[in-house]
Length: 319
Image 1 (cartoon, rainbow, N blue to C red):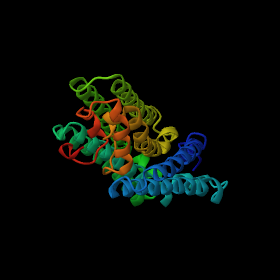
Image 2 (tube, rainbow, N blue to C red):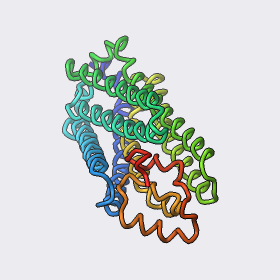
Image 3 (tube, rainbow, N blue to C red):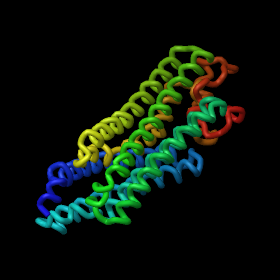
Image 4 (tube, rainbow, N blue to C red):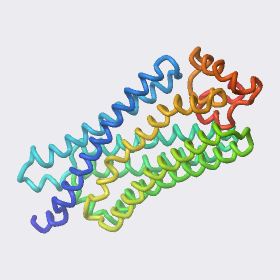
């Protein structure tokens, strides 16, 4: 048994998972903060599906953290000084894997939809590819979880390494592909639409902020996936990849919430040009903003070319 347990040293398994849980808990605090800010700013302004999306992701983020904490309690507290426990998969471990994967594909689908809207519904193939990559990542996690549920022990999974070692690799690879495509696609369309539209200091400033935000958000999630993939392949007998994969779902959620919360500030910086930078229907607040800016902007000035990125309505319906 000591030979078997030596394959799962506590420092590189439970220790790595514990630190990953700590990082996930920190990120969860930002999730709660940004969720509160979102409902404080946009209650009554956004469409219903945006509210449902935010609530769903917050619930999934909460469940993921609960599963992570229960997993660590099971291994380190409830079975203290019982190292054999590390050979078996707890139910919270399985649900944690699935919850993180579901969160990832929901956020990726949200950005795929934004990419489709920003392209004036032309680049639908790119959006479909993003969703397919996200579904591939979810399928990889589901199959891996099913094997753990079937055999109930990590040891059996290790013995089947010739088959299963590629599932985590596939998950990280699919996620990297989806995140990279989202980042490149949105950045490209923002630059292209802006160069074809009206140029001004305010629009230049807003577009730079949008591009910087897109690159930063995409780079963080992609980097976490790349590091997790390297650790997973280089150190397959350890769980060092959990240092980055456990907080990953919360990075997805926070990136989307940060995007939603930034709309009001960007619209104010853009004035009437950015009046459509919202996923909501036109409100009296937006109309007041437009009226205040008419003294500084021509009345017939066209809307921002990048406004569809923030609008859930068709471009032709934008005002």
